[in-house]
Image (cartoon, rainbow, N blue to C red; front, side, top):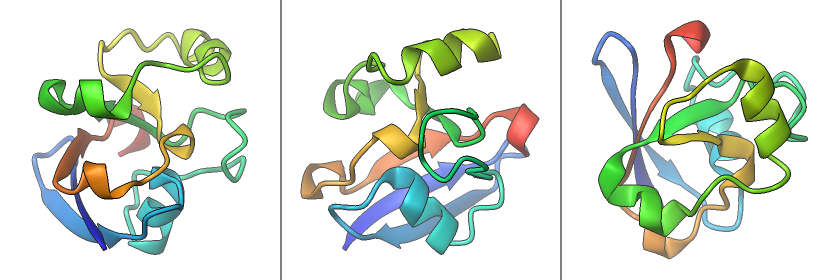
Length: 106
């Protein structure tokens, strides 16, 4: 299992034990993270699974992909750490990952 901490807009932290091989979004939904709505089920069409990867983890999670880019642009979200959690595959290297959730999903 891979430990991932979600920080809500109010500062509340929730740690889940994520399963490697699944997306961060799938793990968040299974872990009861309410701010991750995932309306489109992980198809990068809705943007309701956005997270903000904290600076120290951005090199590990990588940059916005071509699949994510149109949805993130459409959302108008310009946070430097913004990613769609449906496009981040959980791996053992992400153990300890910390992400914030946006106010619009809180």
